[in-house]
Length: 316
Image 1: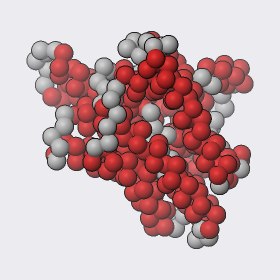
Image 2: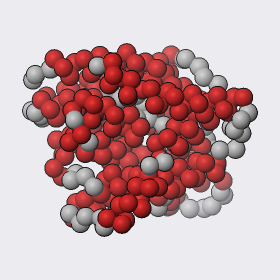
Image 3: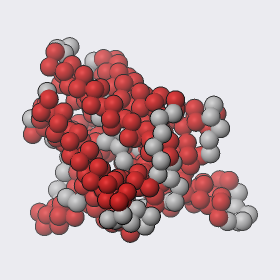
Image 4: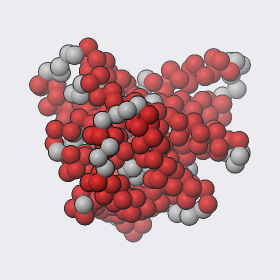
């Protein structure tokens, strides 16, 4: 169990600490990360997401996809509503916080955990988790950020419906959204990507996880970290509530023992870095969302260990 936990968290901590230190001491300018973020959001991550979704038989993986999608979107909507109604946050802030809480770090931590626990033949499950996050909460967050940006930067007489439609169109046209959509369509029609295309996309996609974590560390090095009640609450929802709810959904669906274990472990991964990258792209950094991601990652050393230990004893 210790080796699995180390494989899951050590690379994430190492790369983020490396870039955080580089930003703090001035080796890399942490005030100007837009170009690096463009490489991540426009090229590396889209290539990785396209390969992951296109190469996975998503229909066959629906028993895992359904609980993960349900818990991500349920958490997202509830946390967004809580920030808007109870804490009076604006839509952009609420969306970035909701994404930080709802979307696990499947892109960076999913593969080492799943393959170490369940074997390499279950690696396709990681693509399912990536697809769930890329096709559901991520586009919704981008649409909200687009809409907020449009409201702040224009005096157009367009009505609310027109602004929402335009913001949604801008959001779904971005490579980070289009790539998993295209990959999902390829998977659904059963058309295998040509070997040359796979090799080319993988070459670009290999840089995605490490570079995304590096940019995340740079952004965090320029922002304050604070443990507020809201931050701790968000980390608790991400690390404890989500896997428990996922387990309840799997039981309700009468999922197999293996499907239940896979789904719960994926939901128990710490918060992902997409919110930091999205916020950087729109110059809308959320200190609370960023702090939630850090807190979730630190706390996961305990909560993920408990979840991994549970997988060895759960038999249905």
